[in-house]
Length: 328
Image 1: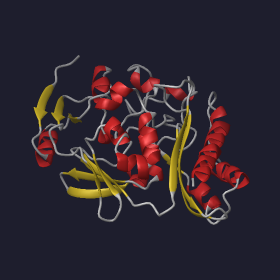
Image 2: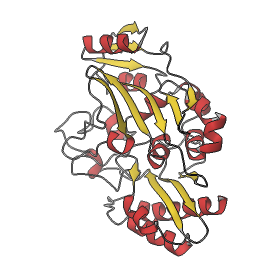
Image 3: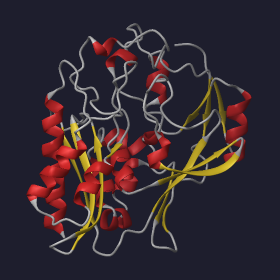
Image 4: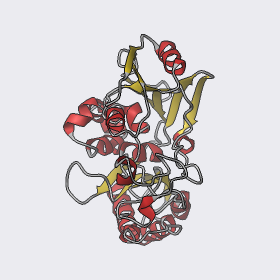
């Protein structure tokens, strides 16, 4: 392992200054991702800026009825916070289905937002990978691609975003709050991630020195319910082959509000506005859920080994919508 330097930030502005002083810096929170990437030679970080002493852990109610979650809040703590469990159960469920209990006790909300893909070709350090070495190619295109994306792909990259949490945050219209050398900004999560296109090495809109400080969730309409459903090869410590987060409000005969996001199938947490459009104002019936699922997967581009994800994602989405309907 190559030599690393280490600093401990005392406040947000200190963290940004320490990170920008060395272009090869990375923020260190739980360390459950960054340390792995450094060990594998994927991250070129030479200097770690420890942000764990910053006051960014709280989960607080907002005056407008929404929720404020600090970027350093641990996944397990957020998952069990009463206001999250009661008002945003999709987030609680998504967090509890991610990783292992030990990792959830260390991993932070902000770190999860920045989580890199789990594509084996990125992480083996030797295969062609445009994320690791732009212009080298994508080994997954002609290699083992069973777990790879079918939405938002390009000829340069077909890797999936691995997060469960971020799928739920996408369906709940979360806003990411960022501090950086250019000041403060708030980015809707729908604009936070970028599809690979011709620049797969760029996964988010974050700039060097940018620090995620907290996430806000808007107040849900009275009567709106949410859920998160994850389908995977085994019951624990496994990434999704397909997942769905659904937020819905209906009166039994008409869907008044619907948000749909999918995981395991996209190069980023995948919001399906086509599916939402297909359901808004319609009756919450299984037939309409199937029609929405068809709309959500219409643009899918499966690879040689992951064509099954198209049907799996449809069934996952229909089942998740049915769960929300029955919970109302």
